Length: 287
Image (tube, rainbow, N blue to C red):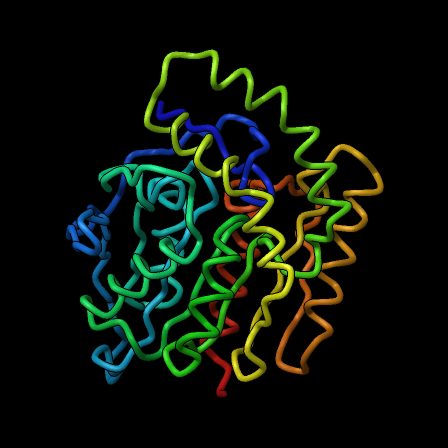
């Protein structure tokens, strides 16, 4: 059994329930791609196209997990996603997770975006990309789509961070609630995952305030999946999370809000069929 600490919300600072990830049914090819002195591991599941499907021009499904998680988080989803779509599927380990190198200092969403951008360019995945982004990865998706709207055919945002959620009041409340967890992590013997979570904590407030001003490009369609239970125990924060996703989805006619009924923040394992169907529907769209 492989155990991970799931996303801390915002910059994924909340320790979520333990996740068990099964062995891979179809081993991907792994490629280390260098940028700024460190390697990022990308895992490529080959396409299984239908007759006549043009693999060279997409679609390409890119899976991006929440904070503190690596590419293995998606493994239970990949076989059905591959069966339903036939597409090439790329997952990756952000810096400091999985097979990727650690990067010292506070976490940088711009650096993380550049790592993904650099990897997709090296893999020739710059057309027909469908981003599937969970939790923290919503921030990376927002910045990547803003830089390269022509790369992105659409996004499936899985209980993902959206800009409108991160008001100053929310950030201050979350920082106060995270303080005991941060102290507990600092008191433990350092592990790569612990160091990454502390790096997220170090930049959480600044990164979240900047993200609050970010704008999703109007030309890029999105399916916005929100969990029923949300990542929060406090009713006010849980409702604000739902409302922020509803406002985001209502911001353009090419966005759709989907509720993952009965799901925790861990939609990938609680309601995987909702994600798979959203990707299938997105592939059927034309921009």
